[in-house]
Image (cartoon, rainbow, N blue to C red):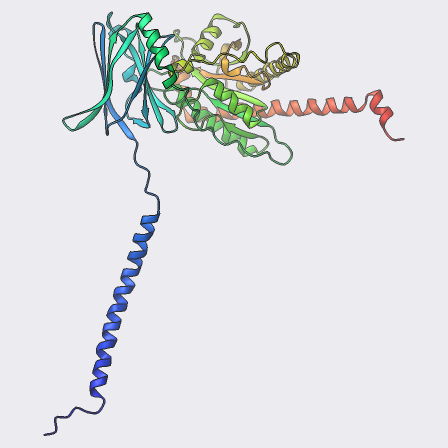
Length: 447
């Protein structure tokens, strides 16, 4: 028997085994290569941003001359606490913190406050990008005994303990810690559109309050800062749809912005009109309707003075000391002339706005008022404050939270703004025509 293999059988089988091995290696390589690429790509891509620490519950415990605030948090935080005078407050600065809390938790009704309570209220919110703040209002001077994170039963919490003090000690401590408590950085304003062909006028809309400064509050947790931001966005959309003006917001998020910072943003954007939006509360629930304010050294009436005082308190509500006015401009002749012209244009726009709001049908019985609003004091930008209504009025409140009413009111406001700019442009054309018809201009014309 011849057991020799056929010629070529050995190499053929070897080739088959090699081919199968190569195919298997190719399959492994085909699978491994995308995996390796995915791993390499994941290593080079930035990690997704970490969720900010959240405060999920809060409570206050008070006894005579002592107070203890506890915020339950999802992780430990590093607080920086300091006192601020006029009025007496304790400020607690934190890294960015999401407050998943009912704001009303810090506003106990007066009838539930004890006569010896050290803390009257507290509020919380974003102060600036990456920063949050708690502001504690005091009935009298207090010192910070403790402000730190602790972990009890594996649950982190922020604890702030206060004890009664005296005015002298409070002032000394506030002065000592003042350098470590810098003025808040501004919230990031919505970017101003670039100048367009044809030189479209620039409008800046200022939604009042924001962040730690909630503003007024309604009986069911409604917040002024939210209502006015929603209205400002609706108004911006109306104006941008028409395409005749450029428009920007001083803030487009729930973050605090100081009063002088709002004016600075308007100047930086080249604003030719500044409209600040608010929705306040009053002690009289019967008072209702929209009101339009311009600036003046003396308030037009007691109610206007009261509203201006509350709005000018916004910086203090966030734990800041307001800046004094720049006295360098005062007394300059050009400054004074510009301010007079600016305030005249402010009053013109106020009258136009009131006329258009009559179509909405919900004006205050005295809709045209004036007072010393800090946010309206730009000497070179016509500025008006629109009070949409009062959260203390049930009828106003039902309108303020209605999307349908908001659209109608924003439309009326947009029409008033466009009418104002139309009249300004017509006036400018008439002035140019008159200037061109002077005897000097006629003599200068070529024959």
